[in-house]
Image (tube, rainbow, N blue to C red):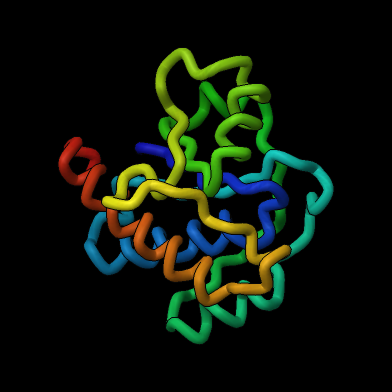
Length: 154
């Protein structure tokens, strides 16, 4: 099964939101049996914590099922376990390359790089704008779903 890991800094806001949104999209498209979705953080500071309450509220407000979640740090051994690592911002991509000592197989990307307007997804922990984060994540997940279908993964 093809494995995708959404990655942000602490794994309590953006990456678990993306995990929930993308999992819901896969379920609704009938492709949930072909792709397994995870999330992780480049930092250990939130390890074991659940989804940040404002992120959870936003997902529920949008009708997205909230998955059981405990913040998990990304490790160097994850590179061989999963097929694609999707960062929320450039800083996450750079941190993943450090954790993995590079990206020899081209498994790392930024979520919004597969959209018509490549850009970072601002961290709502700092901005407080969970509406904007959700819209950006949804846009990126829709584009990623299209990209994976074009690559024959779905």
